[in-house]
Image (cartoon, rainbow, N blue to C red):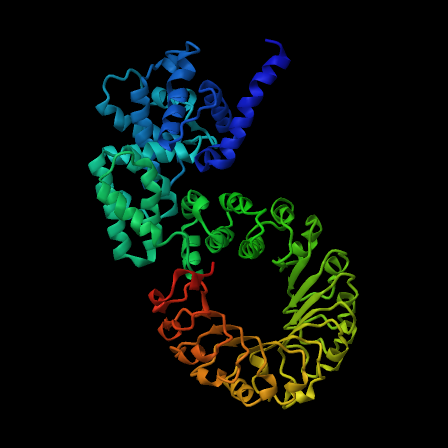
Length: 617
């Protein structure tokens, strides 16, 4: 066949194999050296691009090609004076693999292997040849062994060692051994393959034992349950009650709900990622973000490939997770292959290291940047003509904000934990719409705030040396003010002069009490009340024009009854993962819709029509 025609015939095989290796962990694990890549290519061509879907079938096919067909089809027999059947080769290789696994080894001395083969051959009297000849035959002709160093022997790939060793464990009925070692990373594939090799009753016993050990040893609970879950793919026939129990236990762990869950899954590693990869289609935005954060915490090659599947989504939570996961991988390739595929608008691209900062030039659309850490030079951010939002966090070196202020498209800036910044005069210019100031120099001068004509949002978390808001410049242009924890001591006196104010966020009960006695501020339309212990919501009664309220509870149950008297309130958002909110008193407020953040628990929801209870991602 002419070279051009052969190339054209092989192209579809190549493309199919590339796709398969990129999407299937079992193939990816095999394709790690030239020999194994050649084996996959041969299997792919031999089976006309129809590689086995199940891992056990894939390894069976690979073993058949290596142990039998490679020599048979080339009419090679009797080499080294030994002619072994597939069953004989497999039996010896299984025992060698299991011996290595039990001893925590990946290679053995050749003289040790010969001695082991000599022992095993006593029950295989039909084999003609010496132990040395048999070992040499297995090393040279099986295709499964290699000589990593003179006088040493190892399997060509750990996968084959685990597959064959698992078969030996099952034949020896060493299920107790498998369960005892199941919490160890290097036994993951051994246990899963053992489930595939076992009979249905043995599978049920093994999986049940894994769950029982998970209950008895909580420190290994996540790993053992997920190992059982991963093993289900290798159990075509299984007691349905066992399968249902494993699946039910897995649903409690995946996808992760909290940072604690993510940390536990990260300890499990690639096994957890493999299970998460199989459930991506049904995930919502928050669950998808949790998967990305888990992958970032694992930081392996499999984790990198998993994160890449989320790189071009535009959801905010996923964007934040993709950016945070950057810390788990090499900065340059991650910027080129992941960060560059998103439009960073609505989510911050987070640069926390010098390497990440240097890699920002790979990102073509960089609207929002969050820079963490001590550094004088921010030119790789300030030189970007496309950046519109910048947040500078925990930088004890920066003093001058002139370069930031000079950015042509800058609309929003946050400065937090930058104790040398005492002057914000350069920011007093048109175009700046959003500003957050937190824990800067103690003598920070706030007077430039009055000279920011387009400023609409202002967040203050700075311990100003003053007693009341009246000592701040009057910001008549600001429509939304956030007074965070560091300003709780300030009196609200003077805030009535901020005549455009329509939204207010408070973190102190004292502020709310003051607000209730300030009629000129009772026309607020939106409010956030954050972590106020023992708050009495009767204080909200004068705010008759309030339309939206975001309430973050502390650790005590709140009585929501007073909110029913706010006739203009149409949207109430509740957040809290401690005590549940009782919604029953609000049921008569027919115009009010309740929004519940993730993990917020409530009672009385059954009193509302479904459209009035909205659960946020």
